Image (cartoon, rainbow, N blue to C red):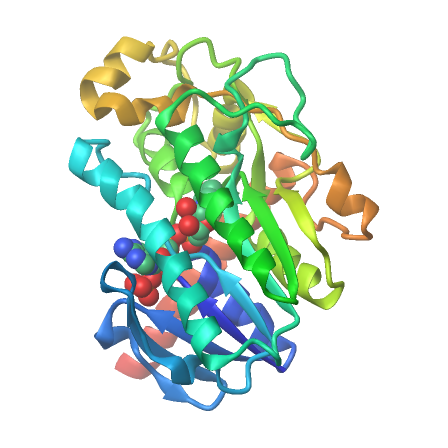
Length: 320
Ligand SMILES: NC(=O)c1ccc[n+]([C@@H]2O[C@H](COP(=O)([O-])OP(=O)(O)OC[C@H]3O[C@@H](n4cnc5c(N)ncnc54)[C@H](OP(=O)(O)O)[C@@H]3O)[C@@H](O)[C@H]2O)c1
């Protein structure tokens, strides 16, 4: 089997590639950076430039499923220019893929699975969101996710399965929000944000990657939340990160206005609250390896410190 991935070089993509290789699934991937192109049989890169609708059609050769993760990072100042880039990168990528598939032909494709985000759900301390919810958050993030999903729906034109995974806060030592949250805690200046009551629907990166592969292998169709079964509030998350890092927490929570001064509109990311259900994918038979945040964080930090130790002993071995 061969899967085409866009955004394969990012945090989630790298984990999906790793898990696919462990299952003997080969990868073609589209990248916007020519210097990230590799040409191994099980990991073949192809250049594309979605902003000018440019795509190498050879990327579809031998492919039976597509995973779409491409998009400029939302963790950058939300200036008008960056906001435009965040939205356009997602829409242009989907349009370029759509046109490429029309031109190449989609007969061999059985599944198209795309990332979306739980930022689509309205900010709320009390709601518990399932995929049935139709309301959209009245924020830049809500608008991005809604427009993104609308564009994904255009793939229903093709005869293959179309699946959207609304991703929550991805926990990994290798990138994303966790290392940023952990930095002040490691330096003894960590604290929760605002009231700390805002819900954070997190997921371990390895469960999320398995979910993408699961939806292809089980031919899922429709929307699924990409979150673990037990969301936590920000107070609890920060406390568990501190505990996993063996650091004390003694500072008062950081007020919203302070973060707004530092991060501008992007501070919304730290204060928005979405409590999201994982029930639908579990009912399809998906089993999470990391159901509680304490377990997930311990695995992440244990694994990171083991990797560090093995790198040190490797370099000692080769320098002696
Ligand atoms: N991580 C999270 O907590 C989280 C939460 C909710 C939703 N998501 C969504 O899930 C997807 C994957 O997340 P991630 O954390 O793996 O993201 P990531 O690490 O930022 O990777 C995204 C990839 O998209 C590609 N990309 C960047 N700018 C692009 C552009 N202008 N046009 C086309 N492609 C571009 C890059 O690949 P190349 O350089 O190879 O082109 C990059 O490696 C993203 O769309 C993200 O918004 C993530």
